[in-house]
Amino acid sequence: MRGGKPTIDDVAALSGVARATVSRVLNGGPNVRDEVRKRVLEAVEKLQYKVNMQARFLAGGRSQVLALIYASDLDSQPNSFYHAGLELGALRGCAERGFQLLMHTVNQHSLSKQKSILELLDSRRCDGLLLTPPFSDDLDLLRELQARKTPVVCIAAGREARALASGIGVDDEVAGYEITRHVLNLGHRRLGFIKGLEGHLSAEERYAGFRRALHEQGLDEKDMRTARGNFSFRSGVETTARLLAGPERPTALICANDDMAVGALFTAHKLGLEIPRDLSVTGFDDTPVSEIIWPPLTTVHQPLKLIGARAVEMIVDQINAAKTSAKPPAHHYELAPHRVVMRESADELSKG
Image 1 (cartoon, rainbow, N blue to C red):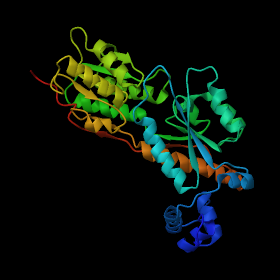
Image 2 (cartoon, rainbow, N blue to C red; image 1 turned 90 degrees about the vertical axis):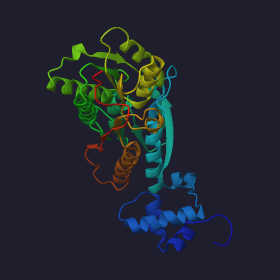
Image 3 (cartoon, one colour; image 1 turned 45 degrees about the vertical axis):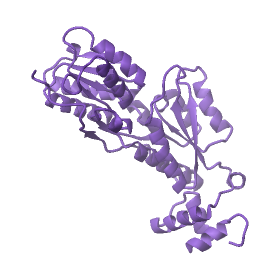
């Protein structure tokens, strides 16, 4: 490079490949060996090469931008890491495939929520959509996107949505079952469950797993205490205060996400309860807060960054198929691995 901004030819020279190969890598094209792709991306980073997005759009009619859509209820607190984890994974996937990522928040209670999402496409600001709950379960929206032949991938979608679009997520029902089985195996029989947002189908699946584990033990869910939260710390604080009021309080609380579980711990500490001697608490997601709260939180690990990166791979495959006039990939739903992470917030039922 002889001064000035680096060019695609400079990237090709430094990585030792042809100009066309660099172009394929930056456009997320097929038929590039992993070793070659890695060399090209390292050269891009070393040279600080910037793609001219305007020129690319004019030449190819595409923006090379993907939009990650998530809900923003202005009346409640955001989930502290869920969307950030997905974003980190999606950003990594976009960087490896020559795309940029646009984060677009939409109030899920707005009457114009679908219009807000479709305007991104009408203005040609993005080439495809990554939908998170509850939008990944909006069947009307998915049918409209299907009619427009818009590349879309649904994250943590329910069963009906999976018939309309490809997606990825964990098996929430199995995960809910496994965390409940863990608590039952610790000897607890009086349980409480803090649910997530109403209409959040993947969170409802976690509760379905909870019920299945109870039934296997001959327990009736009607004898358990449940409350509806909204995934926020505050809702965990408030619902836990109600669940622990009165006689025969639960000896263990299972929460549909980590933020609500941290709120549950806060209320338990405020009431003078010792965790886990007086109350065991579990969460879901294995977000960073689960390790730094005291005591550290038993939870379900959900690989959010992996899910975000894989969602990008899936949608880029759809976009590339459309470019080459190839048959688009068939709808399919991938299950990401999950596991129960056992920490100090849950222990055997105290005999005292």
